[in-house]
Length: 380
Image (cartoon, rainbow, N blue to C red; front, top):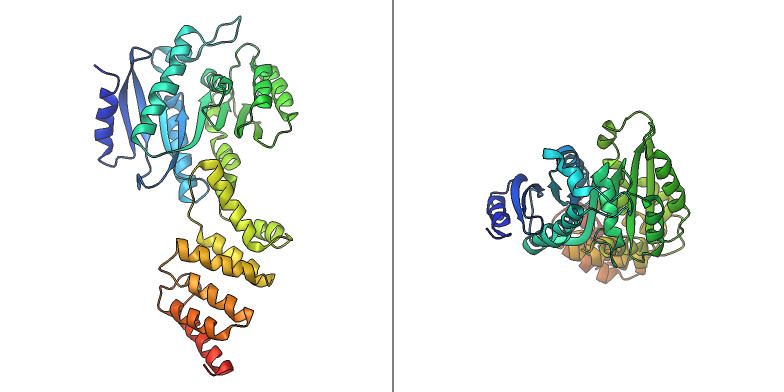
């Protein structure tokens, strides 16, 4: 049986639009059949790009990750993602897959094969058959958390983001990870979640934490979260949502606090804040995000409040691109022209807005009021 036969069967099953499916992946590298679970967003489309989240210890973590990802994406706190989970609880596979040599700290022979399985079989299969964005996230717990660190030591890390939950550290990993992060030039999000209960590796983890915190590089985003209540078992249920907050903070809509403290107080044009935010999202995730209505209204309010009329013009162009059927683009253009002292052109823009769909506070009645006011003032 070829290595792609069973994944092909999985592909056929996914055509039924099932969100979660568990299949058997025939691995040529491992010479084994492995249980793998997949999650796809309900509205999956080849026209969109989706970050990939790879979850080891899927028997424990997969459902937790899927639930958090669904909740966060539904509330626009992270992009919709494709999630793949590798099951490792049977016959203690997690230790076979992820164990390391005590003297060197390097993966065992089986670990090297498992590394190749992830990097040269499973992930390439998903990239070939689905619309995967460049951004990839690794999640592991205990011994499987440590295994993710090995992907940092390629010339380019396969993953952009790591969530290591209470890791069992390989030999010298407390110094190797900080050293590698210091050398890497690509953007990396490195999240550690740890219980305060004493474990064998706790002191080494704190040593690693201090070393990483001393790194001052813009491309390394490090987060260390300790929790008082959970023990080594329950810690697996903690931290996933916090990690999503840490990694995808930029993806969230502009908040009232952000509006007051960063937009209104900035000396730069209001529109530049929106432009920079979405350019950064595209740079990080590898795809263009549709501009949220919430963000458009925040920039509109800021442009009016700061009398930044050039930003209003730029905003009208964005609205015509992302909301072409609505009034926004031409209505904002009309306001810009009116404030610029071009009443005749403003009236034409408001007339075009009137013919389009209402959205948010923008109604046809409001467009008529603008048209009538311009007629009364200038006799057009």
